[in-house]
Length: 69
Image (cartoon, rainbow, N blue to C red; front, side, top):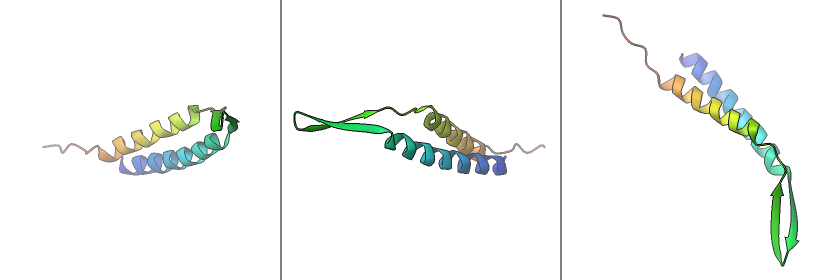
C-alpha cells in the first residue's frame, strides 16, 4: 500500500503542476476601464482529477495494516 500511495502521490503532484500551469497559461487578458480582466478558457478537469489522485495517494500512505492476533 505504501508503494502504491507513493506512486499515486508523485503522479498526482506532477499532473497537478503540469496541467495547472497549462490551465493558467490558457487565459486571455484585456483592459476594461483601466482594470486588467482575465478570462480563462482552460479545461480544469485534468487539474481536479490530478488533485483527487494526490488525495488518494495520501490516503493510501496513511492507511496502516491491521495486525492479526
